[in-house]
Length: 178
Image (cartoon, rainbow, N blue to C red; front, top):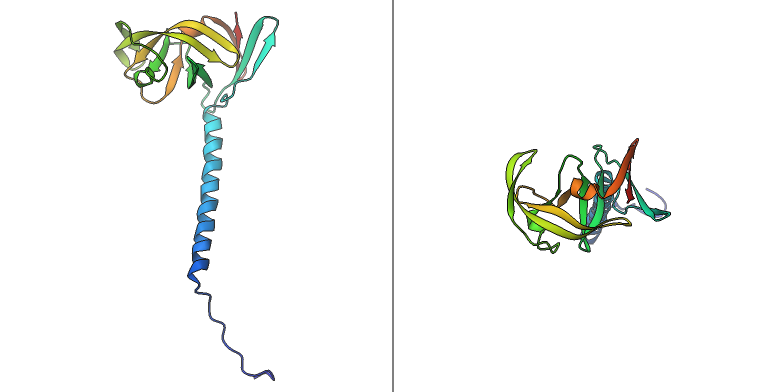
């Protein structure tokens, strides 16, 4: 015994409020980590979410960085609506998932059969009034509304790419207005 009297045993803190605060702190930390990793993954899939443009004389130049899979993916606009493009030099036309047509102000036209990487498919022709990547603006671009495409990514085919000059340098693709 000490000269101050008998010592009392310290009981563990069973405060329910403290437990909830600890749980909330952990949940907030995990939520922040999830947001951080989600943003990092999105940047790896689309490193060109805000394509930068340069004007050289009367021509506009946009440089795109390859994504982690070696593809060129970029954000852009169709009829002033935000979209994500995957550049595809093997596609004859711009190919748009059918479900995006109404949102992008695209009217389905005549049905045609096309040969895709996944086989033969019937699509509807359409015309894009305005397509934009960075400062490059293309008008009256032929496209297809494709019922076989799922998701929101648009294949940017040669009906758009033939209106620009493009060159690959290492892991970058340079697009120039004509």
